[in-house]
Amino acid sequence: MSPLRKLTSFIKWAILDETFILRDSEMPEHQLIEENEKIAQRVFFDFVRFRSGLN
Image (cartoon, one colour):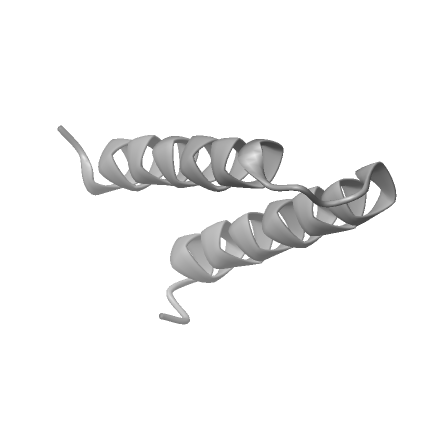
C-alpha cells in the first residue's frame, strides 16, 4: 500500500472516530457543526502539508 493510500485511510478512520464521539456527546447541534468544521479543516490542512512535504 502506498504512503498516500495509507494516510488517506488513516484520515478517513480518524474522521469517523471523531464524528462518532461527537455524535454520542451531549453537545447542542450548533456546537457539533462547529466541531465538524474544525475537524474538516484540520484534516484538509494536514493533507495539504503531507502532499507539499511540510511535515
